Length: 171
Picture 1 (tube, rainbow, N blue to C red):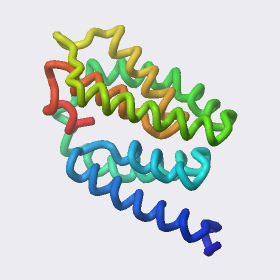
Picture 2 (cartoon, rainbow, N blue to C red):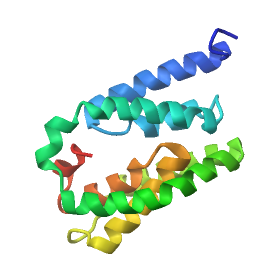
Picture 3 (cartoon, rainbow, N blue to C red):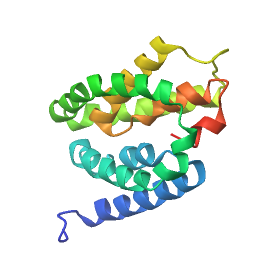
């Protein structure tokens, strides 16, 4: 045990995970929380990992606001935010009440599902409408509250839409 209360393996995994997640975010513009939460949750309970990763993600994202302000699709963001605000408390409830092992499995499966769908080229034929954007916001809020990984539904929505990669850098 060290001053943080981690055993050596947990500390090494945490540091390596945060470093790797930071490199991935630097190259792709997203993915920090997905990598950090899924990997650190292998050695620490998700209820301890999620708040820390969420704080790191917010701190890393705040500096991007001036750069992306003009490129934001405010119409879809409104609907994503509405759904997210409604669902986030339910996600936090799950985080606080679901045991660590099922949460680890659920988090890993959700990230894997999103990766497989993107890898297989799953795509929308046209830009998503308000109901799908709102539903995506609900999924985002639920996952963000439960696991600090609200990104996969949003990434799937935009990367599989005709807007594609140009929008993803603004997420």
